[in-house]
Length: 178
Image 1 (cartoon, rainbow, N blue to C red):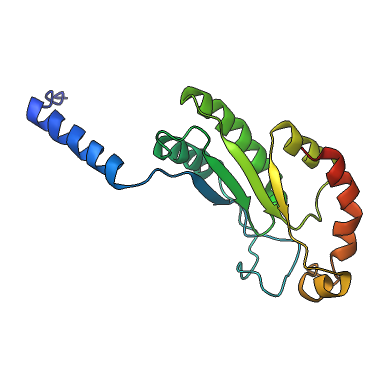
Image 2: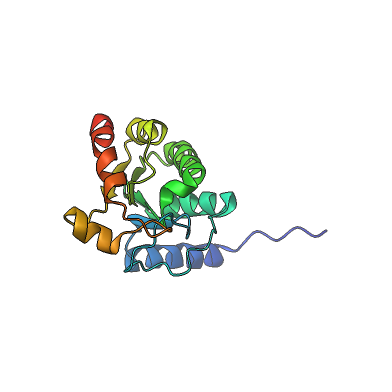
């Protein structure tokens, strides 16, 4: 097998110039919305994920997404991953993989990844909340006002309203709040 010849000085300069041009032209990536699953235990009437397929992001895509963010965030020291779904807690194993892999990789870039998630709150328990606290994961809890209004729009897959399930977990969430 013939080895590739060493690029010429002109070629190396052209590549460096192109990279510099790209870096100066395009803003760094600061935040990635990571749709780790399309699945959800709810059927909210205004959800943008139609079909609620039980698809979950693969480990390979999780790692590639983290690597992309760390590379393309360039000089940003605290790039962020926002977990979305469906309901991201249905893919808790992928969240854990993302956080563990992301934190290890971020050290190589002298960065700190910041994590957050949007959740319906119905799947929180001590294990998940403890993990969120240990890793500084902040969450946006979706509540649509009073019980009647909330239950009109946010229902479990079987048609029951979710307000009580969320409200019953709020004291537990407060225990683990950062």
